[in-house]
Image (cartoon, rainbow, N blue to C red; front, side, top):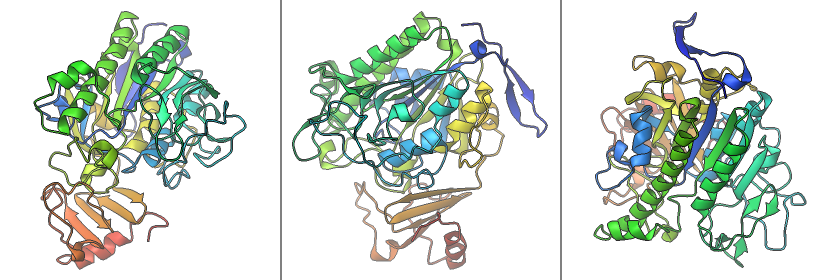
Length: 455
C-alpha cells in the first residue's frame, strides 16, 4: 500500500478537513472496534483505578478520546444499527433487539427468514465497498440472520461470527432459552470449532483477512462480545483480580482479556507496517449489564446514573476514541457532545469517500477531532428504547418513563420522577435531582423535541 500523505486545510466554512489523494491505494484502512456492555468508565484511560487496559490506553495516547460520547441506544441491536447506518435506530428500522439465532436444524443462512436490519439500509460496509474497499465483519452481528439482514447482505465481502446476542466463548452455544444452539458462522455457513476461545478466533480471522487484502484498503467491523456475559476471563487475569470484590473481579478479568486481544491486533498492524495507514475507531455499544447472567453487575458507570437498558447517562454515555497516528491529533481529549451515528460521515470525510445517504442523523466529527474549540455538530440528540425516551439540548436533558437499571446507590426513582425527569447535566451529572416541577416551561418545550413516534 502506498504511503499516506495528509495535510489539514481550512475549508470554506472555516472547518478543518483532510486533503487526501483520490487514489484508492492511498486511502487509509478502517477498523471499528465495538465492545459489548462496557461500562462508562471501564478503562484506565477513562479513570478506572482497578483495571489494567494498556491496549485501550494506547488508543487514547495516540488518538482522540471523547468524554461526552453517546451511543444511539442503551441496548445492543439498535446501537449497532445506528453505528453502521449513521441513522437513529428507529429510522433505520431497528428500534429493538434482533431475533434469536437460527436453530441447530439450519446449516446455512441463505434459506432463513426473519426480521433484522432492513435490506434497504445503507451501511458503512456498503459505503466503503462502493469506494473500492475490501470489507469484513468479524464478531457479533445481532442484526438478524434472515434473508436481507445478514452481514453479506449489508456490504460485507467476508463475515465470521455469531448472529445472536451472545454465545459461550468455548462451545459457541447460545443459551437464551429452549435447546442450546451453536451460533458460529462463516460466510453464511455453519462453522463448528468447539473448544476454541472465540476472541482468539476473532483475532485469527482478522489477521488472515488483513493479510489477504494488503493490495487494497480495507474496512473491518470488529465487533467484540466482551465484556458481555458470560464472564470468561483468562485464568491469569482471574488470579490477578482475585482480591477484587465479586462480581467486579469477574468483569475486570474479562475486560483485561478483551484488552489483551486488542493488543494482539495492534501488534499485528505494527508488524505489518499498517498502523499509521489505519484509522481505528473504538466504542462501547451500551452501558454495563446488571442482568442475572452478568452476576447483577461488575461494570461501572462512575459518576453517571443508570446502566444497560437505561437512557440515564450510564446506559448511553460511553468510552469512544479515534486514532490514526501521524494524521490525527494524539493524546488529546474532546469534551464536545458526539454520537454513535457520527462515525459514518466522519470516516467519509477523513477518507475522502462520498456519503451514500443524504438522510443521516450523524454529523462529521472532523472539526471536533482537530480542534478543542470547534462546536459540537449536534444541537439536539434523541434516544428511544421501549417505553422510555430522552432528548438532550445543550446541558438540558428530558427523560420520559426513565428506568434506573443500576440502582446501586439506593436512589430509587420516586413515583413523581417516573414520568418526566428533567436535569441540567452541567450542574448534576449524576442525574439525581429532578427539575421538572421547577421548570414546567422547559419540560413542555423539550417534549416537542421528542423522537418521532415517541409516547
